[in-house]
Length: 77
Image (tube, rainbow, N blue to C red; front, side, top):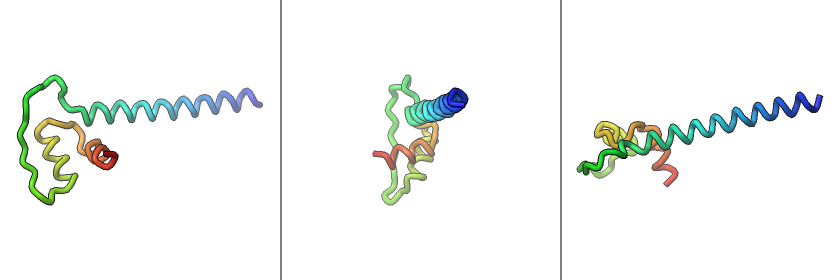
């Protein structure tokens, strides 16, 4: 009985680790943008713009690939 419980707990822990690792990889890729491109991009962000609007502008310019990751980033920093 203890052996089955340990195996189940190990599988659950492994699944949690995989989900967290996948989330971290997605986040880093989504917020990183195109690191191979050293071109400067000039943007004008209007006063009073929301994070959603700024995220959409950044995605439109190809600076980021995910507006959701940008929102998470802006809340964490």
